[in-house]
Length: 204
Ligand SMILES: *[C@@H]1O[C@H](CO)[C@@H](O)[C@H](O)[C@H]1NC(C)=O
Image (cartoon, rainbow, N blue to C red; front, top):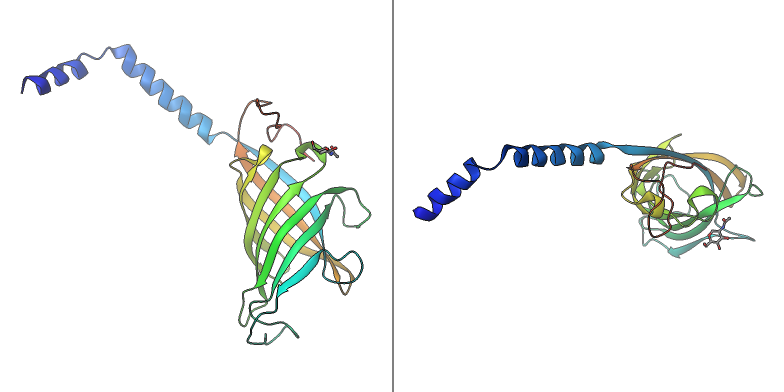
């Protein structure tokens, strides 16, 4: 009884400035959390499924059933990729990274791949940073939208989306995809102690 009335007295007599300081801190924290930098990267991905320079290898021949619209394809077909990423659509254009991961035929009737990959940047302002990209790739759609699920380095706590288009076919085995990556990352100081550049300061 004595204890609870003492507690009440302490709260009631909490100096006004302490309350204001706590309120100011809460507001500053929420403002910082709301401030995010926007990043847009356009990259071209070279998915080469056979022949010289192959970067995409089928791991699993799906046990089926056979896909109704994709000749030779089976439900569950899974491919591992380490595809080159370039600045422009040509394979000869400067390399900016690798798309490492996999895609699986996850549509029984629709031509839909489940993509799960890391965009590892190896050049430009974001060298050493990575972006996790996952999502549904309906290859019959002109533009597909995938998810930026996170990242490392300059892309820590990134969120956003990727607009994914088939740019052109270099050959039967070489598909060029255009990736427009739109991400936001928490706004921050220009450089952090571990040497990674913070996002938004520089763009590729
Ligand atoms: C990217 O970073 C690596 C490791 O720090 C370095 O060896 C390489 O030269 C850098 N590449 C470019 C194009 O800056």
